[in-house]
Length: 148
Image 1 (cartoon, rainbow, N blue to C red):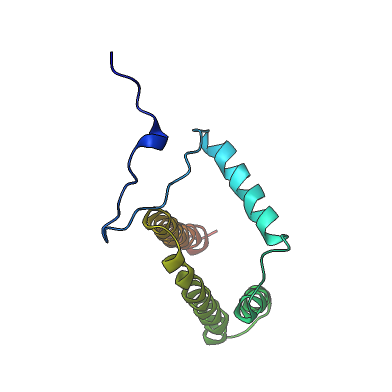
Image 2: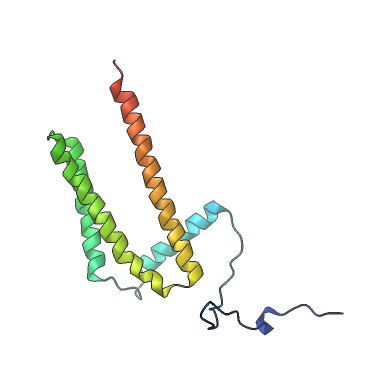
């Protein structure tokens, strides 16, 4: 009778470079909503942790986000020419690109699986933004282009 394999006795898996791959921690399966709220709690705990230090560029991007929010609010609430309304949008796009570029460098310190998951989340967020923008454009064209 063959004994059940003990995972601790298995030889370590190797990545493409021939080096032993890092052992991945296996978490129990949960519903997507439970995972979502646990992830939010984990990020919140990490953001207030004493061990995590913010870089200067982190504070710059936080300031840019606040500036972008205020400029977008001003663009929609103050009567200005259309060309001037385009400036806050361009500023926001530039700030988001700056933010993403500053954060992507961390991916080289992740395992291949973690880097792939982060990339997939980034791509999903991009497509959510694109489709949300298209939906808003369609709704605006539908509700504001028909006669009253």
